[in-house]
Length: 160
Ligand code: HEC
Image (cartoon, rainbow, N blue to C red; front, side, top):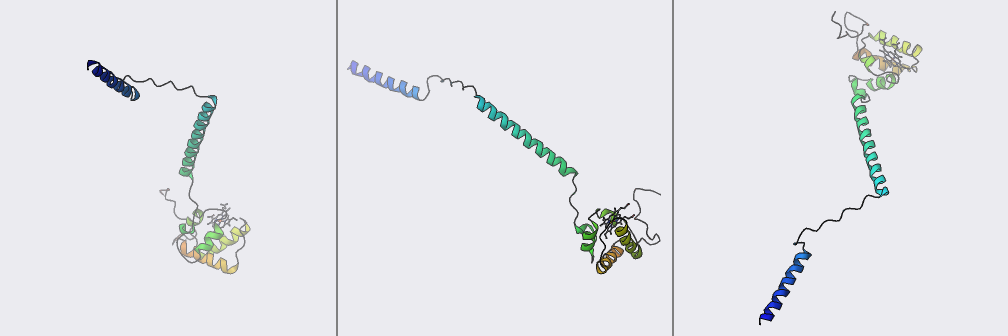
């Protein structure tokens, strides 16, 4: 009787000990030290770091350019009116519209400017109908300021 109890008790004890071992209850098992990285793994890691650095540099360069690049002009920078598209098409090949927008001329002066642009600056000659539409638009959109025919718009940075 005592022997049977002793056998059962030791079996139970063995079961408990085995169960505890399987589930790591008796002491923490040391994790084996990871093997040192192979040369291939080191090279791969370095390549990854270099690629990340290049991507970061490209992002920084794109941000720098975005901060200093002006978006391309569209005809809408000019006041609306018949002939706006023609002016934009014919006049922005060599310079932006800024030089046009800051100018104030009479119709005659705009007309003479077309000759000057062709003869001195190398603009393609406009056919008669196109020229009329362009000059009409320019004279209407950028007329000479009254009392100062042909002068440019006053410079806002000059005080006298
Ligand atoms: C082939 C190139 C070219 C084209 C096309 C051209 N321009 Fe010009 N334009 C110039 C150049 C170059 C100047 C600057 C000349 C200078 O300042 O010596 C200029 C100057 C001007 C000026 C300033 C004139 C002044 O002295 O105040 C006006 C205004 C102007 N252009 C309007 C126009 C208009 C309007 C058109 C379209 C009908 C046009 N340009 C098309 C080359 C061009």
